Length: 276
Image (tube, rainbow, N blue to C red; front, top):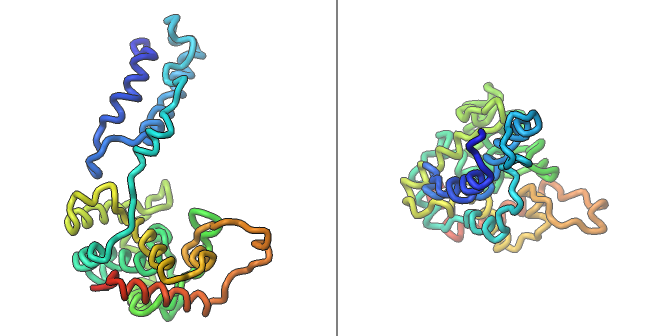
């Protein structure tokens, strides 16, 4: 620890870490990830400095506490430029997957509803309508995540088939493992990276992820003329707060179904559902 000078720490943070390439994305480490590693190192040096384990005069403060953070412009450049799928790209993904498989069904339902992938693969059987007409998200990433998500056929048929096959397990997607430490499923994201590269090539790295289905659904909803408040109700987005928000208790189920039908029709007319 005595060998780690403030200058070496700074070079490690601003030169070495950004040069480390991800095996999955083939890109350098993002500023956010680099900061996370430095944050993990800092407490150990805090202890060493405060407990007099480090005797060199240069350790008047923690070498991992930098006077200047990464510039905001640098952080924005490190952030991947995510986009929605094109119709051709969804057709290729759909052609590369099969109905009835854990991956094929997950991609199809996320495309048809715009739900977050972990909301979908963690879905419990009791939270799905018995006839497959939709499902309830009880909680999630934000306080607005709790909602009812209607399904339009053949997405309804897909969910019905899953319930018929897997409902006794208590989950709609029991094939996707849940990580006990986080309560989430990272395997589905890793699966999609491999599938996307095979179907679309490595050029899609950094631009398209499984979460892009959510971008695609919302874009279709906007182009279908769905009101923003309704889009937020269906997708679980917070949306802007207004003075009358307290008095607005949401849409009826049949109104949500009607809006979802319009989004589905727009996706279908635009060629996004070919091979669904």
